[in-house]
Image 1 (tube, each protein chain N blue to C red):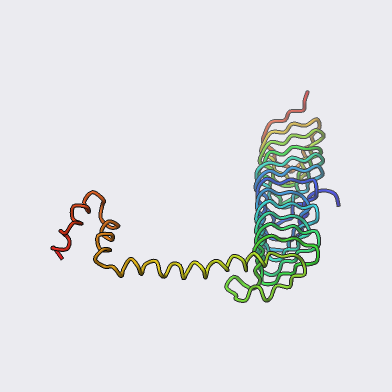
Image 2 (cartoon, each protein chain N blue to C red):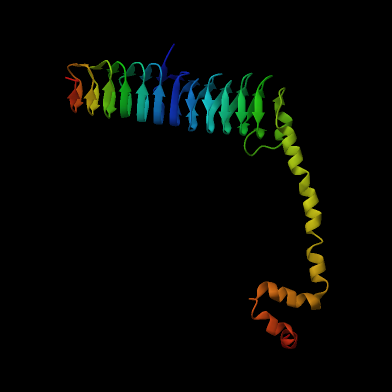
Length: 104
Length: 178
């Protein structure tokens, strides 16, 4: 039960910061910072720069993504923005436009 | 689809949409949703709240308006107005503000609120007391101005016309013209 869940019909406009996980099923516009993982589910839209731990993306993100762990773009995901992460996977069927910086 | 904002989450911005929300974090902007909003004991809302149903156990600094009902439970601390067709204020809830039950056009607001906790009803009673005192004072004020008509006419002219013009007319020019 730990963590924040933004449900399907909900829109948050502004900055969202959390010390725990964030699961987005609705819409976030602004900024999203989580100390733990971020999951953007299918159908969710995030128009924000996202930073946090593990990112699992199946929805749409327009903004830069910065993770201190790994970023997984699943089938159906759409990411327009730059990614900064130590590890990244992009599944077949995911859409991505942006640069990738893996701290090499 | 339900939303839950946990204790360690801080939102600087507003929250909109349809669905139920269980809010245990902090928000600096307002919440306006179509659904049930539960503000948990650790919840802090810094602006107004608008929902279908509101159940508050935490702190709200802003107005709470609901289209169906508002329940302020033990632990609720509200500084702001509370408006809904049905309001329940339980033992231990704290409210400082105007509490109004019924629809916005409804009458008899105080009679229907079931309050068992401290409530700001006395504040309304005090506010209305000075009003009748002001009215009778206002009535006699115009009367002494109107009765001594001859003396008052130049005084009225002073009020209406620009100051440099009036003293010249005041001495009798107006009386002759009339």
